[in-house]
Structures are given as structure tokens and as C-alpha cells.
Amino acid sequence: MLKSATETAISQWNNTGAFIFKPVANKKNADIIVLAVNDPDNGAAGLTNTSMNSITGYYLHATVKLNSYYLLNPVFGYSQQRIVNTAEHELGHAIGLQHTNKTSVMQPAGSYYPIQRLDIDDVKALYSRTPQPPSLQDNNDQSISK
Image 1 (cartoon, one colour):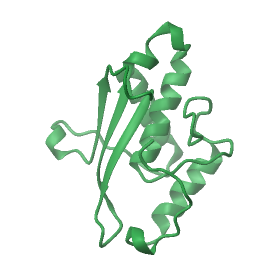
Image 2 (cartoon, helix red, strand yellow):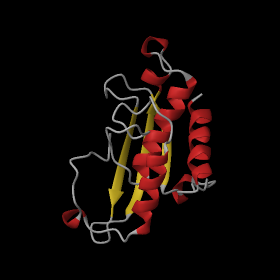
Image 3 (cartoon, helix red, strand yellow):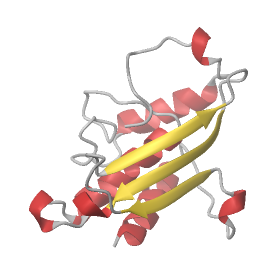
């Protein structure tokens, strides 16, 4: 079920035209890796860890973890659509989006909205400018890894 949700989330992002994910056969060649985990202790349905080149500001690698402990346990009430939304949210982090309190796939809760026009515009804006090292960026007190 998590693999299917990930595939749907990738397709949804690709359909926006704002960012195109290209699957690779060997994960050693992947810039973004999506893993299913079963971790009752991390407190999150999804988590993305990123690494960045501190000189260029470019993202180098991201690991998305979708947590089956929360996503597939009926006690937590995740529908298939909310699982897809969670995957879309975490992929948003993997490509550089941060949390927002607006109606967006990037809301901190991460599962109530699918990709919105705001998200598409944010990705287009992000990739239309040259990245800067973190020390030069305007930090909006947002977290990349949640």
C-alpha cells in the first residue's frame, strides 16, 4: 500500500509540471530514496532527511521515510488519500519545500490536502532562482525535515 501511495504521489507531482521525478533502477543512482519504516517511536507518519551542498545551496540527497506504524494502523485513521497526501508532503520536502500554514500539501500535519496551486507555484519559484548557501537564505523558521 505504501509503494502504491508513493507511485501515486510521484505521478501527481509529475503531472503538475513543476518538478519531474525520474525513477531509477538502482537506488545507488537515486537522489531521493523512499523507504517504508515501522517505527512507533518517531512520532511521525512521514519524515524526510535531506543533505545540501553548503556552498551552492543545492540539495544533494533526500531520504523519505513513510511510517507504516501510523499510516497503515486503522487506529490512526489514515485513508488511502491521506497516505498519498503524506507521500506528496514528504516528497515536497525532498525537493525543497518547507511547511506552511496555508491550504497546502505542505501544512505541518501533512495529510489533509493534496498538492495545491500554491505548492506548484512554490516549486516553480524555488527552481527558478539560483540557490544560496543556508547562511544567506531568508530563514522562515520552517523545518525541512518534518
